[in-house]
Length: 109
View 1: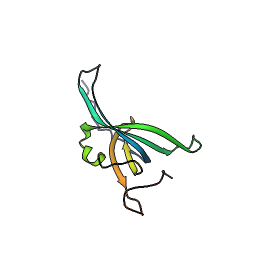
View 2: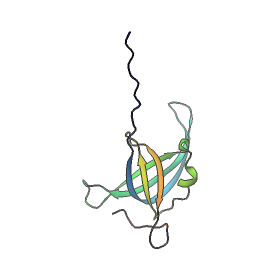
View 3: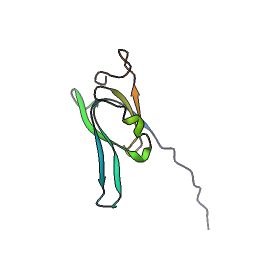
View 4: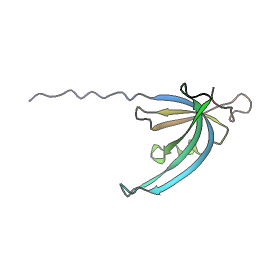
């Protein structure tokens, strides 16, 4: 019997600069798993080369990440860096300081 090498794959992280349009607290019981799903959805706008202007989307930040305290500080008008894994799930959120007041920003450039 041959042993297969078990190499850990490095998880690729993508970073996206986005402008926050709104936030939404989410909490419900999954019909598939019957488990509680909770977190915060960020409604964001960002640059996309295939879109004239900016694209808009909603991204979910799960409470399982244990970064809710950071995410709760996010307000409409702020710019954030969203770290996503190869599946597109958000794994980190960082507020991008603005030159004017340290928090609010303009749409992502």
